[in-house]
Amino acid sequence: MKKTIYKLTSRLRIGVLGVALLMAGSSLLISRLVLANETPAKITHVNLSLSDTPVPRDGKFTTSFAPVVKKVAPSVVKVYVTTKSKTMAPGESPFGDNNDFLRRFFGDQFNPGENGQGRNLRTPPQHGLGSGVIVSQDGYILTNNHVVDEADSIRVAMNDGREFTAKVIGRDSKTDIAVIKIDAKDLPFMTIANSDKIEVGDLCLAIGNPFGVGQTVTMGMVSAKGRGNVGVDYEDFIQTDAAINPGNSGGALVDAEGRLIGINTAILSRTGGYQGIGFAVPINLARNVMTSLVEHGRVVRGYLGVSIQDLTPALAKQFDLSEQQGALVGDITAKSPAEKAGLKSGDVILGYDNQPVTDSRHLKLQVAQTAPGSTVPVKILRDGKETTLNVTVKELPGSEQVAKADNQDNNSTDSLNGVTVSDIDPAAKRQLALPGNIKGAVVTDVNQDSPAFEAGLRPGDVIEEINRKPVQTAEDAVKLTENVKDKSILLKVWSKGGSRYLVVDENKVG
Image 1 (cartoon, rainbow, N blue to C red):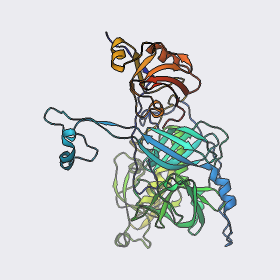
Image 2 (image 1 turned 135 degrees about the vertical axis):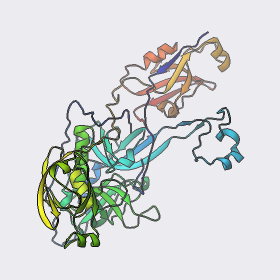
Image 3 (image 1 turned 30 degrees about the vertical axis):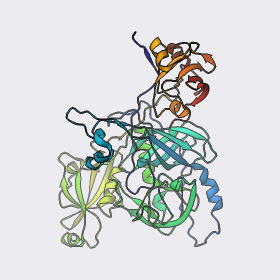
Image 4 (image 1 turned 90 degrees about the horizontal axis):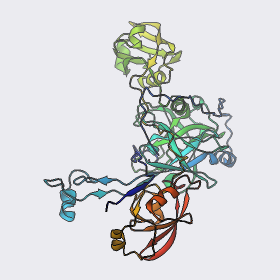
């Protein structure tokens, strides 16, 4: 007899867990890739609370930041991420290519052999932990790309105990910024400051979830601005001595007024823990990336078409510069905005869009944040003379969003994902030694990453009831898991020990 197997709405998901640098954190549900030419049919906007005034600098020191912490702490959330277990092909090792030592102890399960024979290995599920900052009352959250990069699911836990399943709106590895969203309203959100107006010496607070101990607040000051060489493409980091540790990634760096000035991202450490040097992405840069991800589905960056380098003292002397500032143009890309505007190799770019250029990294950031199609003045030094050219900026070629979650079926009313069942046939009765009075659907497979597996459902179990309704066949089981309003499912299950009840809560995905 041919066995008919039904799949209880199991869906394929894509993703793996990742963590980078000595990033202060770990590693959502990524359903499809978005190419550079894809844009949402409808432009979405994020309603932010902005404050442009600098903090008072009267030299007075407060005895407590408790009022500030009470105001901002509810906006900082814990971010829990999970990657599912994977099946590795015979010969593929989780420990690399050199498996000779392992084979001495485990035999040929790491050896594919001549015919590709060997034992399949299954890696365990991986879990990560980071932080995030709510920036709008309807659930937009800023965090780091390395917190959510390639993970399968994400949960957001708030201070008041509520938990939500989140989806990826967009992420950008070039700045290590990601935007996620939860389905909620009237959330406590943080006011955003103008990070260009912070100064070295300003007090700041870092808020996050270091080492998973729970929300923690540390105090320090802005130690430096405009730091680079941390490991991403577009760098303008705020350096702080406020204690930042693993798990703080994606958390908030706030000023003395309780306004968001940065997203905590990385630490410089020889031990892996706090040593007084932490880095945060300035909120102006993070906000620019977030707006682009939300409105366009990708990060739209400006493009000049020049190869540039920093000026050394020797180069500055050769080009008759009194100060070691600016960006030296090496090459010009053919048919680029720079070529069309008349820029040449050997020019020194001193100013861009009426702002001074300090070095090549600074210019790269300025250009990237220019809207394509904009015409901007570029001040250059050529043959000892200063002149200004007008350049019409284009979009950076190959600019694309690394990954974006589509509107995954969070509103799906099907349940028991990852469970496979079949009818009870004579072979199954003999194999499982089923009593004659047992009716239902026999479980043939349970995904180890599913809520059903976590609840205790296993292959060989017989589902007798679903939500107190009797199950006669596998088709009954499928129908009873369709169009359910509550994803907390009550099962009556028979196994060799007798019948028992299980609650499968698919609201706790991940």
